[in-house]
Image 1 (cartoon, rainbow, N blue to C red):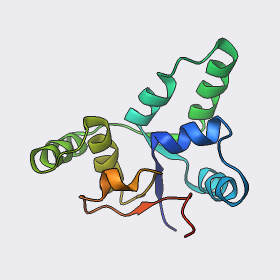
Image 2 (cartoon, rainbow, N blue to C red):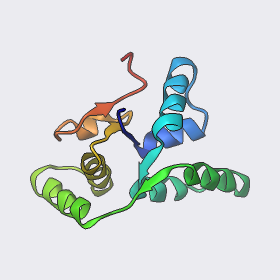
Image 3 (cartoon, one colour):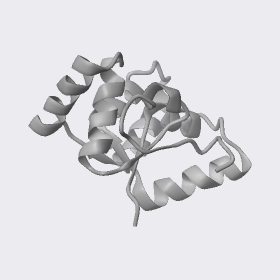
Image 4 (cartoon, rainbow, N blue to C red):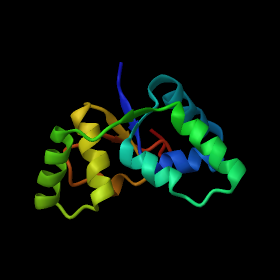
Length: 127
């Protein structure tokens, strides 16, 4: 079975209902089968200015995920990525986390990760 790590943008689109049809079905399936996120995605997602009702729902939503913490190995991988590639720190943490767990990164922003040896999946694309 393949393992997937969901990027923050996928969480936001899904939570806000900005997916429909086949895309929503694909992401719903991934969430049922492999709802894993990086600790940085938890911070980014819950850092949005939700109203009180939305905040409670957002926290409940994230509680259903397997949160991948930062480890010394991930931190070192982030350092190595940042030395060699021009990539934002949060993206480097998410990428290194996916790499550490041999997970496919589910993101709409595949171009942000194209310079890395990382398998990505964009559910908004036809594939």
